[in-house]
Image (cartoon, rainbow, N blue to C red; front, side, top):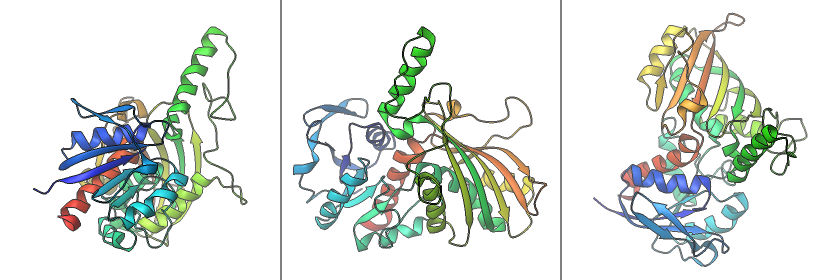
Length: 339
């Protein structure tokens, strides 16, 4: 089996560390693994697998020639600068930022949904990883779209603070502690208090009142699944450390029952259905943390519209919502295109 030289950009961040962990856990055929980050992190160390420790190298001076695949999660501005350079050196960049997602020459891929799109990587040697909330929703909706054709989606998200990075997780922790000991609550990562609160804003506001996160869900769904689908999203940050949840209302062109949807989802790759009508019959973010699959619960017919369903969709945003999806793309890339 051919082995590949892999680089991980943003290796010291939450998603970068999860990428390294996932590559090791899944036994990706690596000949060498390079940890890359900014100059201020260079010289530090990160773990790879149970026994290996990697010394972090400076992304600014790294030569990508001879590197086969780069997994990147270091911010859009960083990706805009280095990804084209890496691509020109012959390295295929799988980028977890928003920088290239809507570029027509860059495929936007969820392996369970549109694996065939990977073939388009040759135009720029870049593949985009979608937004975390989009990924988990589309893994759940693709089998239903194939069955009855989705026309409209209304989704409300409940997104954990890990989606905003390690500093946001620290802020939730320190604010929570401050509430109990009556200390001052410092707001640095979020403009509003996040402890014991919810914030109906993720990313910046746009001119039409949508936030950028809400726009991403709409635009990415059209690019990945079907450009005819109409989507309205309300994205909310909640005081949870890891795991995003979504309340998804779906309208279909053709009739579909809750039972038919449940049966289709039980057969789908990357989906676990836990849907029983009692207090333990659904999955919450705490229970999905560390899991690879997307979990679907509360499957029921929407009696207010024709051909409508409601779903509760939960996933680990650091794994399937980021690191795992990127590694799965790398696996397909190696198997079908680079082998």
